[in-house]
Amino acid sequence: MQGAGAILLDAAGAVFSDDIQSRLWAVAAHMKTREGIAETVPGMNNLMIVFDPLLAAPDRVEQVLRDAWESVVPDAVGGRDVDIPVVYGGETGEDLAVLAAHAGLSVEDVVRRHSQAVYSVAAVGAMPGFVYLSGLDPQLAMPRRAVPRMKVEIGSVIIGGAQAGIMPCTAPSGWHIIGRTQVPLFDPLRDPPAACRPGDRIRFRAVEVKS
Image (cartoon, rainbow, N blue to C red):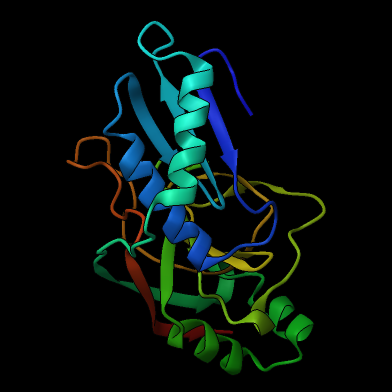
């Protein structure tokens, strides 16, 4: 998809793939080196290229992007290990029991499966510091709420579809809330402002499970 100063590459539609995500990261790094490219923004299975049309013709940028997609060598981003302590359930994890019933598991099994997985930050976006995490146990997947909540608190540990996430600020969301962390994901006065970046590996650590 092409605009006046940006091109969006949609690599796989709604089906997520770690291999495709690694290729997107490699393409993003390659495109940053090209003349006229102002910014590359990897998303889940997609990549936005922002360019200066006075320095790079849109058709030329699109062709370079297509060539890069075919020629780059996918390489996993050298990310960091990030520990996220979580209080599961209770008033700050109000959907934990609902998700357990949906999955046919006990609350304890949900917490164990959620906290034993190793997640990868596939993309950062939607809101400042928000992490889209791959690696969720498939049995914990649950469709998003039909009616989003208008206020999901900062630090909420959430599940939406087959993805896990953490709310970096208080905002509306249709994802299911299973716990909360005190780790700040975004601080505009910090350098860099976002605590996580694509390729980081996240582990959730159960501090407490409330009924």
